[in-house]
Length: 192
View 1 (cartoon, rainbow, N blue to C red):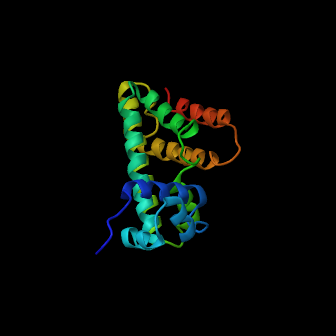
View 2 (cartoon, rainbow, N blue to C red; view 1 turned 90 degrees about the vertical axis):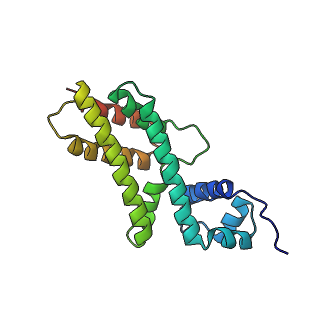
View 3 (cartoon, one colour; view 1 turned 60 degrees about the horizontal axis):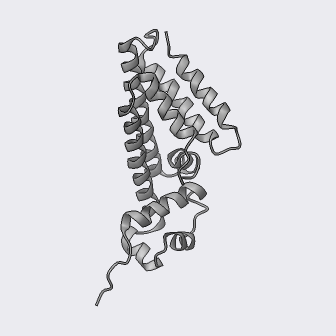
């Protein structure tokens, strides 16, 4: 008779995601995952497949959570400027139990050049993030908050590069105040 599962898939996937986020793919062993997730090795393989498949599922979970969070920041905003400020502040001043930086950015740096599946997932998320910035900038241009001297697409590409850079620097000892200043200047450059 088969044993019933003694864990909830999303809860243990969340634990795997955070471990990969903190340590990276290469440094995280199956033993680390089993211990951190609190499940048996056989259960890991039966439920999630091998380490690489689990990692891809963790990237998908991160993608969904990040998109929900970014869209939530925008929906709560009264102005385009406020939307951008909230997005950058959520990265710079995160106080939850998540590791610093960004799992997608970290994964792109670590694996994208040699893993086509990771490359696709990271570039897809980057495209979505850039599109969100474009939508916010268009909102700001229509409301008169932002200059239309450059296209929303060009400005979104630039702002997204700043956003990714700040996510990388968030993993270092650079002061949050400096990161916030970089974000503030980048947003101010959009103004008329």
